[in-house]
Image 1 (cartoon, helix red, strand yellow):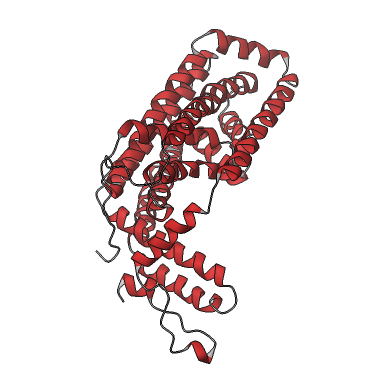
Image 2 (cartoon, rainbow, N blue to C red):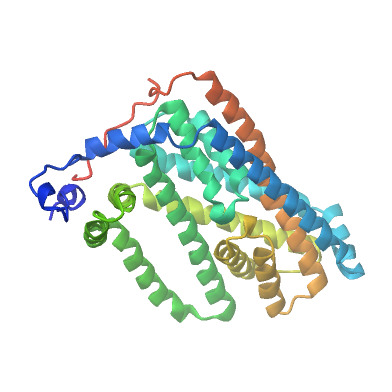
Length: 381
């Protein structure tokens, strides 16, 4: 069945009077128009202010937890921390973070310009970096503010920009898993796990490019919810449209460059972690740094804690300690790495956020900028 028919085929109502009624919205264009109208009623200024206050409150809370944790450090850990801070540890972490952020911006631009056409690179990079200010939200959901900025400044509806965000997350998560498995295989000389992992990963990613079974499943759920929970049926329709457009973007020659940039970003951050450990007089291979960093990233994401605080650090420390590294320098190095990594990125994101807000305020209307010739998307292609 055609993708357009899977998404837009009318759902029979349970009421006999509605059997002959024509569907109110049977085309992707109507759905896009309604999505643009809904986006105007979505995140307003008051909601954004509440979200900003929530993020700032989380930052204050995280700082208080960090101060309390620092009070519990013992003398050897303080000595290792002092060594790492006075050596090149914090500089290595900061440099790795800036390079990784640049690679992430490049990944976003590759996906964005492939899906929505050319536009001002500097403005789009500013909007992406501003999302780092919201990384303290659970699951990094606050990074969706990048889409809000594009809606307010360029007039791009959420329905059109959400596939870029989804595929960016897919590339980022895949890079973490790939780095972790490769590092684990190198450390333990278990290269036989790479072949089944590669086959499984290829199949899993290929599923993303062929959404017909998932669209049929979503349609079945819409049929069940159409007469009872109309809002849920509407959300499922948006999910179907997003899935179809994400699959379309995935099939274009943009995902592999984005994935390679994501892997390069993770490798750079792992090099920074190994350099921080070296500043604390701990010789750690890149493979072990890949394994520890990936374990921390996955644990922090699974915990849904703000910034993965506690879960990410404990996972990194536990992984390094499992391979025989002493506790004191490892704890000190992880603290330095997180300060020069996540917290530096958050501060840069806050600076970019204030600049992006000022830029958006200068634009009074939400019409599409003439310097951003967006292409219309046809899911059926």
